[in-house]
Amino acid sequence: MFSENQHKVGVIGLGIIGSRVAKKLREADCHTYVWNRSPKTEPNFMGSPAEVAQVADIVQIFVRNGDDLVEVVGKMKDQITSRHVIINHATVAPEATRAAAAIVDEAQGSFLDMPFTGSKVAAEKGALVYYAGGDISVLDRVRPVLEISAREILHLGDIGEATILKIVTNMITASTVEVLAEALTLTRANGIDPEKLGEALQHNACGSPLTAMKLPTLIAGDYEPHFSLDNMFKDAQFALDLAKSQNLDLPALSTTANVMFKSTQAGCGDKDFSVIGKRFSASGELNTE
Image (tube, rainbow, N blue to C red; front, side, top):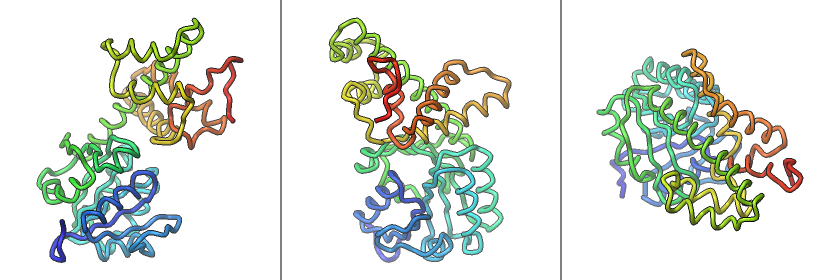
């Protein structure tokens, strides 16, 4: 629990994850101040990012893209002092992460690059896993606050490196779910009960917590968003851009990204990224209902 003499925390970006992190902080009796581009009926909703920085010395940022990150940090700049730790949880291009860090550094504050893994359910349970990049002494300063919403906090390198590791792990996640959807389709096409695929996966090295989580929803056609297709496609584009900068070819991810693009064009971007499996219908066409 937190007392009047302990840190005050700001949360910027009240989407699927940010809103739940703010709730966990409040439940821990942490003084929590929030802001979102679209006004929300949340306790201590502030008028701007600058107002959040005025009252909170730790600010956790959950915005959608790199432009938003740099804009938000820029708006806080005049309020940032040496007492501040600004934490970026958004998965954005490494260049945007480093640009935001430079703004904070110029203002004499501290910055952590800290994307996360874990979806809506993990956030509700306070069981996110944070990938941390930056000065470990700064991480240790804010660890008690982060532990409120985290199951694990992994220090993985410098600013920008944690972001890259999050991007490459999402490559594996996206490609795995694409192949899982294809495997489910082939199973059904041969008249086999889809539940048998789940049973087989439980005893196969290719089975994983991810396949165990996504196969039942693919079978049921349940695409309630836990991590949206728009966000996963965005991360795939970051990975492809990183690969291009290193003259690398990523054929598996390129194929999966193409499938994701077509699904976003069909109006499925706000659904869970596993909606890429929805295109497999009896007619072989994408069903967008």
